[in-house]
Length: 448
Image (cartoon, rainbow, N blue to C red; front, side, top):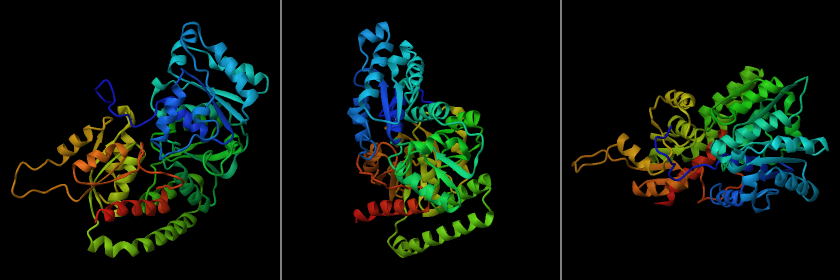
């Protein structure tokens, strides 16, 4: 954990922000904020400039219903104001699911939102609530808290499981600016294994998918960290086991991911190996097209990878295992408790290429330069010096100045992404890795 008392240039939303972006990524869902005035607007304008310009969604942004509690409610309690807001929202805003999300102040004063939920549910309203006060953690924590509430209170109990049906999550809407493309890439691969894949979020997902998720045979969490607690809740409530994997980027990680899923889901070995062979063959046919340029024009780079607990290990693994770059330093920017860091360490210690990267956990943006200086000392006027060059920084928009300072190329991949517009691009899987190569090398050749 960080030893300082503040985080310099935060790389995530608060818990409320993560829950709000997750709710607005669900089809036909109306979030209702029970929070102080300005919370929703602050989250929205941060969202625009941090998520590849992700829009508000249905009833998100400045259209989000909110109790907007003030001094009176903070002193005397805000339940009456919440009850009024929920009633008005149900009357004038069309939705199939309404979710109360709490902010810091209403959690601190102890407003019992579940009492309000019970009142309106007794009248037939499709309403649930989640306590997501911002002080409870970052946006990833808010994602997990909302999933837990959905799995407990919205997903229907199913006595029988549907063979080969799986649920997929762990890719956090908004906090991962490429969430749509990543979910699509992984879902497409899993469907080719003969699985029925339920993602909850995405272009074709609907609330019925989420409501019926209890009949899945297996839950797949494409993360070592995000959504794992929610998977435990799902297993407790619905009896469905889960598999937690690293976010797969590139042929090495994706083949491992597919084999893990196939083993857990009972997919025949021949089926998964045929899919891996077909996808790897297609991937390397495309790589052959740029191999000569890569070698003859010297596209190899030293790299610094800066990102969250999903992206940092995944990107480092791809660069070292598949792309031939040299990731000397990997910086994980989440404030992860010590007892939850081992999966990240394990993934980076066991790279297929055998390459060793320096790993640090660091929340403060300006400290990345110091960690690189410790890993690769600067010249002290020596006549002969092994410079950290040519170099590349794969990180976020916050790392652009650092990249300029060391004369490196830069691509924003992890949150916040404010210098790119993202529609449906994704970096997961084989297809995503080819998109990532295009983006990385486009930066390299643009400077020529």
